Image (cartoon, rainbow over all chains, first blue to last red; front, side, top):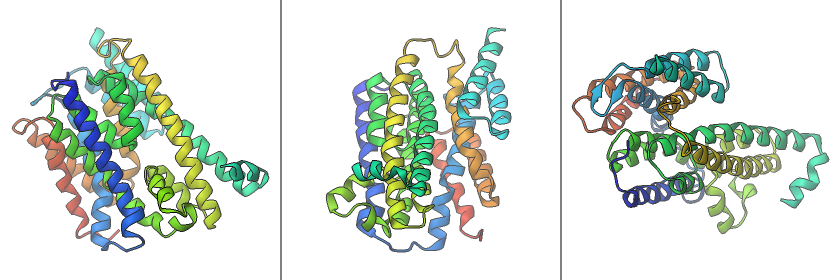
Length: 106
Length: 229
Protein backbone atom coordinates (compact mmCIF):
# COMPACT_ATOMS: atom_id res chain seq x y z
CA UNK A 1 0.00 0.00 0.00
CA UNK A 2 0.91 3.65 0.05
CA UNK A 3 4.27 4.59 1.54
CA UNK A 4 4.42 8.32 0.83
CA UNK A 5 2.98 10.97 3.16
CA UNK A 6 -0.34 12.44 1.95
CA UNK A 7 1.21 15.91 1.62
CA UNK A 8 3.76 14.55 -0.87
CA UNK A 9 1.00 12.91 -2.83
CA UNK A 10 -0.66 16.31 -3.09
CA UNK A 11 2.55 17.74 -4.56
CA UNK A 12 2.59 15.00 -7.19
CA UNK A 13 -1.08 15.62 -8.01
CA UNK A 14 -0.49 19.35 -8.48
CA UNK A 15 2.62 18.79 -10.60
CA UNK A 16 0.76 16.25 -12.72
CA UNK A 17 -2.24 18.55 -13.16
CA UNK A 18 0.04 21.39 -14.29
CA UNK A 19 2.00 19.17 -16.69
CA UNK A 20 -1.10 17.58 -18.18
CA UNK A 21 -2.64 21.01 -18.75
CA UNK A 22 0.52 22.44 -20.30
CA UNK A 23 0.78 19.51 -22.72
CA UNK A 24 -2.83 19.96 -23.84
CA UNK A 25 -2.49 23.73 -24.04
CA UNK A 26 0.84 23.74 -25.86
CA UNK A 27 -0.55 21.94 -28.90
CA UNK A 28 -3.87 23.75 -29.03
CA UNK A 29 -2.88 27.32 -28.18
CA UNK A 30 0.86 27.84 -28.57
CA UNK A 31 2.11 25.76 -31.48
CA UNK A 32 -0.97 26.06 -33.67
CA UNK A 33 -1.37 24.02 -36.81
CA UNK A 34 2.23 23.05 -37.30
CA UNK A 35 2.97 19.52 -38.51
CA UNK A 36 5.16 17.21 -36.47
CA UNK A 37 7.65 14.99 -38.26
CA UNK A 38 5.91 11.70 -39.09
CA UNK A 39 8.32 9.61 -37.00
CA UNK A 40 7.73 11.73 -33.91
CA UNK A 41 3.98 11.54 -34.39
CA UNK A 42 4.09 7.75 -34.75
CA UNK A 43 6.29 7.21 -31.68
CA UNK A 44 4.09 9.42 -29.48
CA UNK A 45 1.09 7.43 -30.70
CA UNK A 46 2.73 4.20 -29.50
CA UNK A 47 3.22 5.36 -25.89
CA UNK A 48 -0.13 4.00 -24.66
CA UNK A 49 0.49 0.57 -26.22
CA UNK A 50 3.93 0.27 -24.58
CA UNK A 51 2.99 1.70 -21.18
CA UNK A 52 -0.45 0.15 -20.74
CA UNK A 53 0.96 -3.29 -21.50
CA UNK A 54 3.74 -2.70 -18.95
CA UNK A 55 1.20 -1.51 -16.37
CA UNK A 56 -0.99 -4.59 -16.87
CA UNK A 57 1.95 -6.93 -16.28
CA UNK A 58 3.28 -4.96 -13.31
CA UNK A 59 -0.14 -4.91 -11.64
CA UNK A 60 -0.71 -8.61 -12.23
CA UNK A 61 2.66 -10.25 -11.70
CA UNK A 62 4.57 -8.09 -9.25
CA UNK A 63 4.49 -7.21 -5.59
CA UNK A 64 7.00 -4.44 -4.97
CA UNK A 65 10.19 -5.62 -6.64
CA UNK A 66 9.41 -9.33 -6.73
CA UNK A 67 7.67 -11.23 -9.49
CA UNK A 68 4.81 -13.29 -8.07
CA UNK A 69 1.98 -15.46 -9.31
CA UNK A 70 -1.07 -15.18 -7.07
CA UNK A 71 -4.87 -14.86 -7.18
CA UNK A 72 -4.59 -11.82 -9.44
CA UNK A 73 -3.62 -14.06 -12.34
CA UNK A 74 -7.15 -15.51 -12.36
CA UNK A 75 -8.60 -12.01 -12.60
CA UNK A 76 -6.10 -11.12 -15.30
CA UNK A 77 -7.05 -14.14 -17.42
CA UNK A 78 -10.76 -13.43 -17.04
CA UNK A 79 -10.24 -9.75 -17.88
CA UNK A 80 -8.27 -10.55 -21.04
CA UNK A 81 -11.00 -12.88 -22.31
CA UNK A 82 -13.81 -10.45 -21.41
CA UNK A 83 -12.05 -7.45 -22.97
CA UNK A 84 -11.23 -9.52 -26.06
CA UNK A 85 -14.96 -10.31 -26.41
CA UNK A 86 -15.56 -6.56 -26.18
CA UNK A 87 -17.43 -6.69 -22.88
CA UNK A 88 -18.06 -3.24 -21.36
CA UNK A 89 -15.51 -2.09 -18.80
CA UNK A 90 -17.76 -2.52 -15.79
CA UNK A 91 -18.37 -6.16 -16.76
CA UNK A 92 -14.64 -6.73 -17.25
CA UNK A 93 -13.80 -5.26 -13.82
CA UNK A 94 -16.59 -7.09 -11.97
CA UNK A 95 -15.74 -10.47 -13.58
CA UNK A 96 -12.01 -10.01 -12.91
CA UNK A 97 -12.57 -8.91 -9.30
CA UNK A 98 -14.93 -11.83 -8.70
CA UNK A 99 -12.42 -14.32 -10.10
CA UNK A 100 -9.63 -12.86 -7.96
CA UNK A 101 -11.78 -12.80 -4.82
CA UNK A 102 -12.93 -16.39 -5.38
CA UNK A 103 -9.41 -17.76 -5.84
CA UNK A 104 -8.27 -15.80 -2.78
CA UNK A 105 -11.14 -17.22 -0.70
CA UNK A 106 -10.32 -20.83 -1.60
CA UNK B 1 -24.43 26.61 -24.64
CA UNK B 2 -27.91 28.12 -25.10
CA UNK B 3 -27.46 28.02 -28.84
CA UNK B 4 -26.49 24.37 -28.58
CA UNK B 5 -29.74 23.52 -26.81
CA UNK B 6 -31.79 25.66 -29.22
CA UNK B 7 -30.39 23.81 -32.19
CA UNK B 8 -31.33 20.35 -30.88
CA UNK B 9 -34.20 20.09 -33.36
CA UNK B 10 -31.70 19.89 -36.19
CA UNK B 11 -31.17 16.17 -36.84
CA UNK B 12 -27.43 16.44 -37.54
CA UNK B 13 -26.75 18.37 -34.38
CA UNK B 14 -28.93 16.06 -32.35
CA UNK B 15 -26.91 13.08 -33.60
CA UNK B 16 -23.68 14.73 -32.49
CA UNK B 17 -25.03 15.72 -29.09
CA UNK B 18 -26.53 12.28 -28.44
CA UNK B 19 -23.32 10.45 -29.33
CA UNK B 20 -21.28 12.87 -27.20
CA UNK B 21 -23.44 12.39 -24.14
CA UNK B 22 -23.66 8.61 -24.59
CA UNK B 23 -19.88 8.46 -24.67
CA UNK B 24 -19.75 10.66 -21.57
CA UNK B 25 -22.01 8.31 -19.66
CA UNK B 26 -19.96 5.27 -20.71
CA UNK B 27 -16.80 6.99 -19.55
CA UNK B 28 -18.48 7.69 -16.20
CA UNK B 29 -18.34 3.96 -15.55
CA UNK B 30 -14.59 4.06 -16.15
CA UNK B 31 -14.38 6.85 -13.60
CA UNK B 32 -16.25 4.73 -11.10
CA UNK B 33 -13.53 2.10 -11.28
CA UNK B 34 -10.85 4.80 -11.07
CA UNK B 35 -12.42 6.13 -7.88
CA UNK B 36 -12.49 2.67 -6.29
CA UNK B 37 -8.97 1.75 -7.44
CA UNK B 38 -7.44 5.08 -6.44
CA UNK B 39 -8.62 4.98 -2.82
CA UNK B 40 -7.67 1.28 -2.67
CA UNK B 41 -4.17 2.35 -3.69
CA UNK B 42 -4.03 4.73 -0.74
CA UNK B 43 -5.20 8.14 -1.96
CA UNK B 44 -7.84 10.03 0.00
CA UNK B 45 -11.26 10.75 -1.48
CA UNK B 46 -10.19 14.40 -1.94
CA UNK B 47 -6.96 13.46 -3.69
CA UNK B 48 -8.82 11.07 -5.96
CA UNK B 49 -11.34 13.77 -6.90
CA UNK B 50 -8.57 16.33 -7.44
CA UNK B 51 -6.92 13.97 -9.93
CA UNK B 52 -10.12 13.72 -11.96
CA UNK B 53 -10.89 17.45 -11.75
CA UNK B 54 -7.48 18.86 -12.52
CA UNK B 55 -5.47 16.18 -14.32
CA UNK B 56 -8.49 15.00 -16.33
CA UNK B 57 -6.82 12.46 -18.58
CA UNK B 58 -7.79 8.93 -17.65
CA UNK B 59 -4.82 6.73 -18.47
CA UNK B 60 -2.42 9.09 -16.65
CA UNK B 61 -4.55 9.14 -13.51
CA UNK B 62 -4.81 5.34 -13.48
CA UNK B 63 -1.09 4.96 -14.11
CA UNK B 64 -0.03 7.43 -11.39
CA UNK B 65 -2.12 5.74 -8.70
CA UNK B 66 -1.16 2.26 -9.85
CA UNK B 67 2.54 3.09 -9.31
CA UNK B 68 1.90 4.89 -6.00
CA UNK B 69 -0.24 1.99 -4.78
CA UNK B 70 2.52 -0.49 -5.56
CA UNK B 71 4.91 1.51 -3.38
CA UNK B 72 6.72 3.32 -6.18
CA UNK B 73 8.28 6.73 -5.76
CA UNK B 74 6.22 9.80 -6.57
CA UNK B 75 8.77 10.77 -9.23
CA UNK B 76 8.29 7.45 -11.02
CA UNK B 77 4.50 7.74 -10.74
CA UNK B 78 4.69 11.26 -12.13
CA UNK B 79 7.01 10.28 -15.01
CA UNK B 80 4.82 7.48 -16.30
CA UNK B 81 1.69 9.61 -16.03
CA UNK B 82 3.26 12.51 -17.95
CA UNK B 83 4.43 10.14 -20.71
CA UNK B 84 0.84 8.93 -21.06
CA UNK B 85 -0.41 12.52 -21.11
CA UNK B 86 1.96 13.42 -23.95
CA UNK B 87 -0.48 12.26 -26.60
CA UNK B 88 -2.83 15.07 -25.59
CA UNK B 89 -0.18 17.39 -27.00
CA UNK B 90 -0.62 15.72 -30.39
CA UNK B 91 -4.41 16.02 -30.06
CA UNK B 92 -4.02 19.73 -29.34
CA UNK B 93 -2.01 20.11 -32.54
CA UNK B 94 -4.61 18.17 -34.51
CA UNK B 95 -7.44 20.29 -33.12
CA UNK B 96 -5.68 23.62 -33.49
CA UNK B 97 -6.72 24.09 -37.12
CA UNK B 98 -10.35 24.19 -35.95
CA UNK B 99 -9.52 26.07 -32.74
CA UNK B 100 -10.72 29.31 -34.28
CA UNK B 101 -14.26 28.07 -34.66
CA UNK B 102 -14.25 26.13 -31.37
CA UNK B 103 -13.06 28.93 -29.12
CA UNK B 104 -12.64 32.43 -30.48
CA UNK B 105 -10.97 34.37 -27.68
CA UNK B 106 -7.69 33.43 -26.01
CA UNK B 107 -9.23 32.93 -22.54
CA UNK B 108 -11.80 30.60 -24.03
CA UNK B 109 -9.11 28.70 -25.88
CA UNK B 110 -7.09 28.35 -22.67
CA UNK B 111 -10.25 26.94 -21.06
CA UNK B 112 -10.85 24.60 -24.00
CA UNK B 113 -7.33 23.20 -23.59
CA UNK B 114 -8.35 21.39 -20.37
CA UNK B 115 -10.77 19.27 -22.45
CA UNK B 116 -8.27 18.15 -25.09
CA UNK B 117 -8.36 14.35 -24.56
CA UNK B 118 -8.92 11.16 -26.61
CA UNK B 119 -12.70 11.38 -26.77
CA UNK B 120 -13.16 15.09 -27.52
CA UNK B 121 -10.53 14.88 -30.25
CA UNK B 122 -12.05 11.80 -31.86
CA UNK B 123 -15.59 13.20 -31.86
CA UNK B 124 -14.66 16.72 -32.93
CA UNK B 125 -12.42 15.61 -35.80
CA UNK B 126 -15.11 13.16 -36.91
CA UNK B 127 -17.43 16.03 -37.91
CA UNK B 128 -17.40 17.70 -41.30
CA UNK B 129 -18.44 21.29 -40.64
CA UNK B 130 -16.65 23.66 -38.23
CA UNK B 131 -19.97 24.24 -36.48
CA UNK B 132 -20.55 20.53 -35.80
CA UNK B 133 -16.93 20.22 -34.73
CA UNK B 134 -17.48 22.94 -32.16
CA UNK B 135 -20.66 21.32 -30.84
CA UNK B 136 -19.00 17.90 -30.69
CA UNK B 137 -15.96 19.25 -28.85
CA UNK B 138 -17.90 21.16 -26.21
CA UNK B 139 -20.71 18.68 -25.55
CA UNK B 140 -18.23 15.81 -25.33
CA UNK B 141 -15.85 17.87 -23.19
CA UNK B 142 -18.38 19.25 -20.71
CA UNK B 143 -20.53 16.09 -20.65
CA UNK B 144 -17.55 13.79 -20.15
CA UNK B 145 -16.03 16.06 -17.51
CA UNK B 146 -19.28 15.97 -15.55
CA UNK B 147 -19.71 12.18 -15.76
CA UNK B 148 -15.98 11.58 -15.14
CA UNK B 149 -15.97 13.57 -11.90
CA UNK B 150 -19.30 12.26 -10.68
CA UNK B 151 -18.17 8.69 -11.33
CA UNK B 152 -14.88 9.33 -9.55
CA UNK B 153 -16.59 10.71 -6.45
CA UNK B 154 -19.07 7.83 -6.21
CA UNK B 155 -16.31 5.27 -6.81
CA UNK B 156 -14.02 6.88 -4.23
CA UNK B 157 -16.75 6.94 -1.58
CA UNK B 158 -17.70 3.33 -2.31
CA UNK B 159 -14.06 2.24 -2.39
CA UNK B 160 -13.25 3.74 1.00
CA UNK B 161 -16.20 1.89 2.56
CA UNK B 162 -15.07 -1.64 1.64
CA UNK B 163 -12.00 -3.86 1.96
CA UNK B 164 -10.49 -3.83 -1.55
CA UNK B 165 -8.43 -7.01 -1.10
CA UNK B 166 -11.42 -9.05 -0.01
CA UNK B 167 -13.43 -8.07 -3.05
CA UNK B 168 -10.52 -8.61 -5.43
CA UNK B 169 -10.47 -4.92 -6.29
CA UNK B 170 -6.70 -4.83 -6.65
CA UNK B 171 -7.44 -6.28 -10.08
CA UNK B 172 -9.41 -3.13 -11.03
CA UNK B 173 -6.27 -1.36 -12.26
CA UNK B 174 -5.01 -4.11 -14.60
CA UNK B 175 -8.55 -4.85 -15.80
CA UNK B 176 -9.03 -1.20 -16.79
CA UNK B 177 -5.58 -1.13 -18.40
CA UNK B 178 -6.46 -4.22 -20.45
CA UNK B 179 -9.62 -2.54 -21.74
CA UNK B 180 -7.67 0.62 -22.59
CA UNK B 181 -4.93 -1.42 -24.30
CA UNK B 182 -7.20 -3.42 -26.66
CA UNK B 183 -7.70 -0.76 -29.38
CA UNK B 184 -3.93 -0.21 -29.57
CA UNK B 185 -3.39 -3.87 -30.46
CA UNK B 186 -5.17 -3.51 -33.80
CA UNK B 187 -2.10 -2.26 -35.63
CA UNK B 188 1.07 -4.28 -36.10
CA UNK B 189 3.21 -1.49 -34.64
CA UNK B 190 0.88 -1.28 -31.63
CA UNK B 191 1.30 -5.00 -30.97
CA UNK B 192 5.08 -4.73 -31.30
CA UNK B 193 5.23 -1.77 -28.90
CA UNK B 194 2.98 -3.56 -26.40
CA UNK B 195 5.02 -6.78 -26.52
CA UNK B 196 8.36 -5.01 -26.19
CA UNK B 197 7.04 -2.62 -23.51
CA UNK B 198 5.66 -5.51 -21.46
CA UNK B 199 8.89 -7.48 -21.82
CA UNK B 200 11.09 -4.53 -20.82
CA UNK B 201 8.93 -4.00 -17.74
CA UNK B 202 8.98 -7.65 -16.64
CA UNK B 203 12.75 -8.08 -16.99
CA UNK B 204 13.51 -4.88 -15.08
CA UNK B 205 11.01 -5.23 -12.20
CA UNK B 206 13.31 -7.20 -9.93
CA UNK B 207 16.29 -4.83 -10.04
CA UNK B 208 14.83 -1.36 -10.58
CA UNK B 209 12.85 0.73 -8.06
CA UNK B 210 9.07 0.26 -8.23
CA UNK B 211 7.54 2.32 -11.03
CA UNK B 212 10.76 2.81 -12.97
CA UNK B 213 10.15 -0.28 -15.18
CA UNK B 214 7.10 1.58 -16.53
CA UNK B 215 9.42 4.36 -17.71
CA UNK B 216 11.83 1.82 -19.21
CA UNK B 217 8.89 0.32 -21.12
CA UNK B 218 8.46 3.63 -22.93
CA UNK B 219 11.59 2.83 -24.93
CA UNK B 220 9.43 0.37 -26.84
CA UNK B 221 7.93 3.27 -28.82
CA UNK B 222 11.17 3.27 -30.81
CA UNK B 223 9.69 0.43 -32.89
CA UNK B 224 7.85 3.35 -34.55
CA UNK B 225 11.09 4.82 -35.92
CA UNK B 226 11.35 2.41 -38.82
CA UNK B 227 7.67 1.40 -39.12
CA UNK B 228 5.48 2.71 -41.91
CA UNK B 229 1.88 1.98 -40.92
